[in-house]
Length: 213
Image (cartoon, rainbow, N blue to C red):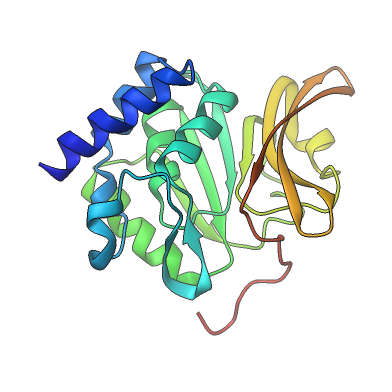
């Protein structure tokens, strides 16, 4: 019941923002968000509030997650890089939309939990890897879409080499100390077109893999 009512309320809020992409909303509906939140927060799974998860991390509110995915505009056949697996919710939705997803997180605890959830949802086209993501994934070729849920102090340089021409990245970029705005970067040849959207609650990207978690 939580799933159906929560999703219905989310869809109403998203439609009020002009988000009605059927493929995206279907992928969200098929990804039971209550499985991704800690048990004590199940009743808030579809709310717009951020929810604490392990390792001092958090998952963004449902509205923000879908808003970001809407800006990313993933299509069948796309190869996607995600920096910041977190709970694995966005990862799972991406897996339903894209050909292949590579998702990185600093914390082995989060990677292990996200892998269990991916397995529960029967997704086999997603690879999770413990890595910091500050340089993307050198040596893995290029991606059609790149999304990050950790803040960069400036536009990430690796995008030039790791994105296809016509590719899109949606990443939080600092506008001043401690404030990050979600930015969409569209690559045309060797140039980028930049669009700034909404402020986000994401934490700064930390380099190095976490050893203890």
